[in-house]
Length: 188
Image 1 (cartoon, rainbow, N blue to C red):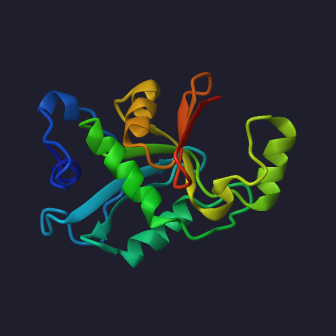
Image 2 (cartoon, helix red, strand yellow):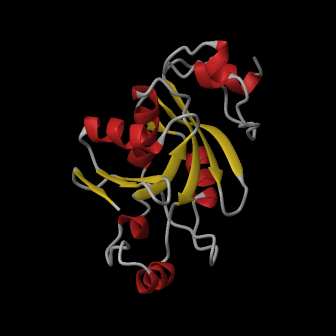
């Protein structure tokens, strides 16, 4: 088992067997100390599907967000169409981490959409009826993802069971929207 897998398993999520962990993607190494060094740490791995950028970081130690990691996540989750960035709500990362843990999965996410600038959101609204005018993507409080080795319907169901924030399941496009707004659920 390589170092990245060991570090992710050490986050306290769920110990998974070697069969389930086989074939995980290579991830960028974080400069922050590993979760093995700090059992109260939360780690997440993100891959932006539009830019190909990957990140594997400890984003929280106990109750404290890791500012260096949040800055790197903000860059990765920027609006790839115009490179505009926005602060990402740390509770969104907690939500992602908790959903992965609830499924017994490593928190390795493919990102379809993170932050959206107002211009991008308006362009998407013009071409789709599924884009909200006041989307939480505009505030860095929403993300559209897939979770490695987990079907999107299972991801959405687990998120709904947590009953915190928005959960949208887009079966045709094969992704799940999660946000830190009020609890609600929909299918797109």
